[in-house]
Length: 158
Image (cartoon, helix red, strand yellow):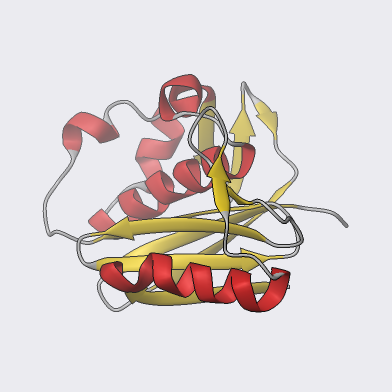
C-alpha cells in the first residue's frame, strides 16, 4: 500500500500528524541520526518532501523514500556535470534532470543516508538505479505534477 498526497507546504506536518494519529494512535515522530523522520509507534512508514510552496507526503506499509522538485525553468549544468556520462546522455530537459535528481534523493531517503554519502555512488540510467555499479532491487515510480516532478522509491519485494 502506497498513498501519495500533494499539498501546500504549510499543511504537510498537520496532514502527517492527522494520518499517524488516526492509524497508529500516536502522532509522535522522531528522527534517526541522519535526520530521517519515523513514526514512534511504528506500523506506518512515510516520506516527506517539499519544494517551493508544494509538498509531498507518501504513506506506506513498507520503507519508502520520496522527493519532490518544482520546475524553475533554469539549466543546472554545474550539477548535471556531476552525473555520469550515461546519465548526462538522458538529461535533455529540466524535467529529465529533476527526475534523475529526485530518484537519487528518494533512494537516499529510503535508506536513511545522506546526499554527501551517496551522490557520487549512485547512477540512474535506463530506468534502473545502481549503487557502486551494482543494480539495486528497488521500485521507482515517477509522478509528473502540474509544476514539478516527484519520485517514490521502495524496496522491490517480489
